[in-house]
Amino acid sequence: MTAFECTLCGKCCMHAGSELLEVEKRLTSRDFLCRQKIVGGTFRARVEERFLDAFRDTSENDAHPSWCPFLRSLPGEEGKYVCTVHDSRPLVCRSYICCTMRIFAGDGREVGKVKGRRSLVTEDTALRRCWEESVVPLTTDDDIAWRAGVAGALGRAGYRVEAYE
Figure (cartoon, helix red, strand yellow):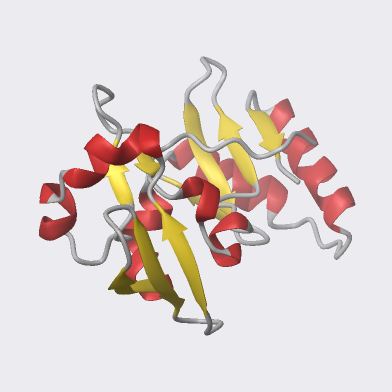
């Protein structure tokens, strides 16, 4: 297995950001006292120097109140987003992985991912059909054996699987 690598899509922080944390107080121009909503407790978030200009532009965040208050568009890169407090983000953010597996078609396009433990997310009907026929019948509770079974079944159908730790 490989280590998970973020693609900077921003979806995790767009959909769960405001549910996970809130800014309680601005301490300085780049330091904030924040509360972790789910686990409680506070932490100090510091906007990184390299993201200060991006952080000052709040237009997208103002239009999307569900976004994490520290998520910003990566300047010059359409569809890419950054955590402006990445080095000081809370444990809930540090431990989050948006998917445990990515599935690629033969041409290299990502066509699906596995979220949580074993939930397929895809718009690809051929992958969905293959999953239903070849993966759903895998009944083992052993995650290592299950991932190997998924990789084998999908590999025989022409897909490439990347599983993450």
